[in-house]
Length: 183
Image 1 (tube, rainbow, N blue to C red):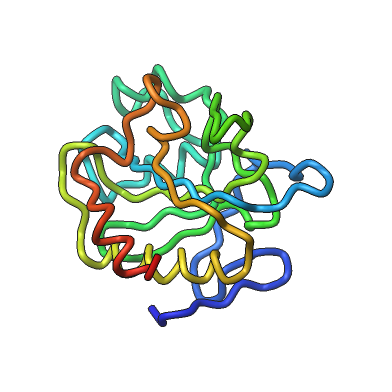
Image 2 (image 1 turned 45 degrees about the vertical axis):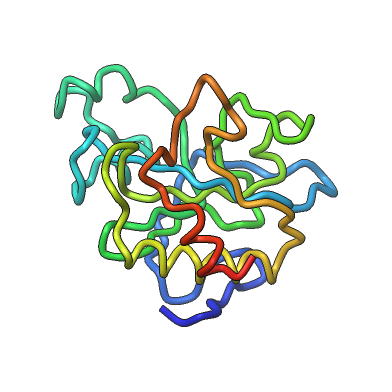
């Protein structure tokens, strides 16, 4: 993936698979994107490469496919992007729209982080190191988003929902990302 990626006017990333999630809506009028939130996800937990995340984000998760799915199948969540273990990017929500990724959240005294953030899910878990390809693609995407929007901070889900969320977790290498992004 190139050092700077291309977003169109609606916030679709060129050259990646687009899988529309219904779990999004318009940002509040006049709300600028100012925050990038990094998450991790694997479904079932700790298993990579399956279709569970796509099915969750598109409201098609079969509650009988895995015991864990019964508790989450009715959730209505999404993210703007998912970066697979091999660096493949899937986009679920254009960046000009509000994805439902952060839930109850607060950053620097501002609640409802979905209103002013872009959410990127990394296929992974709190207790497994992320792949070099994921860091490289995440850095390129972060640089593109920072160039497009007035993003002040790149944070983890745990930073905006402390006590409720732990991702991207202790295996996420923040210094490596900062070095790759150049900020």
